[in-house]
Image 1 (cartoon, rainbow, N blue to C red):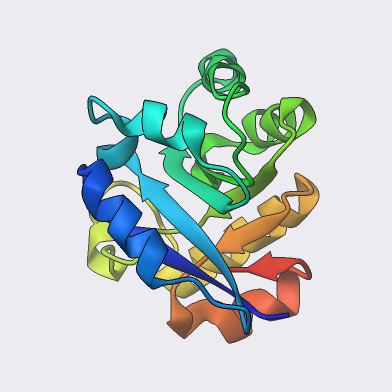
Image 2: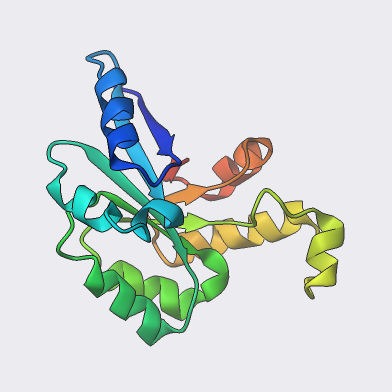
Length: 167
């Protein structure tokens, strides 16, 4: 059965309840993606803790030292989440460590879609977006990540390298 994720881009739990109620379906698996704004909102974490029988995707894009990332993952263990995002740019050691301690699927985030070749050069990368994303897909494979997020423009390239779920 195919699966889609609905981006729940709000901080209002009432709005989230409405989104969930309006998106129920027997024809497709539906997951709900909660980002930084919801998880950092006053009632966000509490709301997530009460959700049952839903595919929960927490999009935090963790990118820090190994120890800090491990602490963040452990801090989420009380929540019944299915997917958690980490930046592939956090490095192979951090990716492997997070994968090892997490019970949910770890999703690697490649180069942000808001960045172009000029932006990459400005922050110190000597590769094009395309080449960097290919490199990151190989790194995600080495780290045995469960899934990878990339731009729709990069799916064909990533699919040749990364053989698991692409979001």
